[in-house]
Image 1 (cartoon, rainbow, N blue to C red):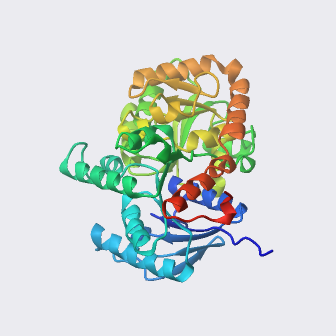
Image 2: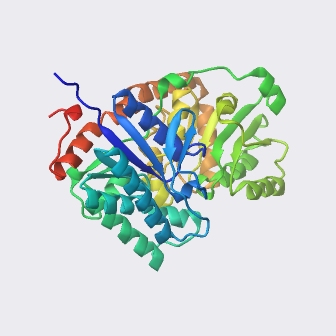
Image 3: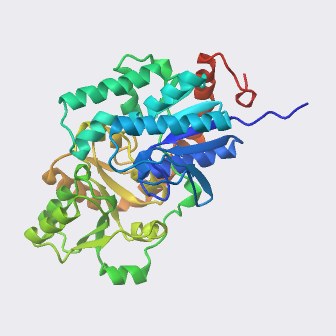
Length: 410
């Protein structure tokens, strides 16, 4: 009896390693689990990876096919370039499925090539293109560009052979565009639990270096975007310092808001109790997480945060960290208030200060909250469980094109 050939999936990505982002880390986790299933994965990045002439690169043991581009190329040209490169790879490797990941700039070329070659297309919407553009400041909600972007997104979603997304908030948005409920599968964000050590004590040498000995540390690690609401955390700290003189704030990372946040710290006179570390190597981030007693996720209430679940709270729970988060929709999907973390009303420094005080008053329950958070990710949010939803998605996509694959079963 001949062996069953592996399922071959060609992923179309916005960007990949060596760039670091939540998008990249989700991609790597999905690819690792698909490889564990015996599937053959290929990986093409769009011109958004950056101007380059290389057709292929090797990064950390992964092969990434690239789309040569110029920084001056417009969006339509970039999509044509992606489609041309994708067609080359389809002709060369004969994949069973094309799996396009957000944004829609990847989905449309995938659909063009898929229809021309008969290869089914799965579209994974990680965020809506129009809402991402609002967040980046390149358009406003309801503008002409916003409406055109939304129409393109809806066009791609309705024409894909199967659709996946990362959370229930986005699934609801997709269904509002007219798709049937059974056509959209959630592949939720998750963590590799084994890669996170639970409840590791803070490194005393690093604590001394940061000037945090004997302090209760609030903190955040990640990219400093406006929607993260870090200005509210700083304002709340200023209001709390007289009642809680041992409080400190540790901000690990950097981003567009960094200079504005530093100016706010100076204006409020809290420079002595706020630490900016700058960006640290990814391998060292866990050491800084371990310095933080209460992780702060103060995301503002906008469409993006209401619809999309972030990765960081899951990583915090896996590490046994206590967290306080604003009650936007993306956080409510992940955090059970008082059980796996704390929630407080979004968008207000006053409410945030009250949330910090509530969390501090409940320190006797922190060990239990840590254990319950870890149990949640171990049982409900592992990448193995998330990727286990793909076989049915791929079966459905293949069936739409009159195909099947023995590796997926009946």
